[in-house]
Length: 232
Image (cartoon, rainbow, N blue to C red; front, side, top):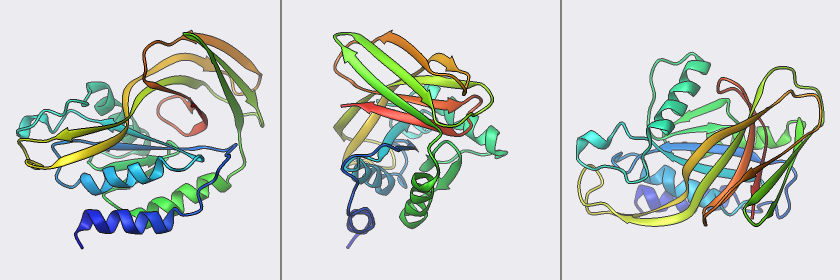
């Protein structure tokens, strides 16, 4: 049994019994690249996480492996900068792929499903800090944030657009000859407002196209994520 198949079987067992209706959602960001030979097991792991309602898994493809022979069609400089921002916030001097960031604070380098499950469950067990609700009418997205407890500081409201899945045939580079499926591929992650962490806040923004939509409320400067919601 190869490593990728082992990953799928192991993660399916670890993540069985997924929540059907979740008030609390933990965001898991995977920094990955089609040019990274170590990334396919982590990509498959992220795919398994899409089956859960209490997790928002997001794939942020970076661009710094493009030079070794295969340009990642999903890679964006903004994703590389976000990963660097997380490293700076954590006091790290180096970035890696694959790397998962759980809840905006816990960093997992490499393919470590047991560690991921432990961190994910710890975040889900923590008291909720804010409630986030979304409603879409045509191209208008309405966002409402309600504090559960006061969280001092400045918090960014992020609008995330992503593709649920896409299959890619990789012809060059470290993964040459492989056909891989990627999940929840982030196309854009934009700051659309700020929240004070104390009062209720409502805002609207315009969205268009067929990409999936999610909203994240996160402490400024790449700190912890307070709330997330996905519009299904």
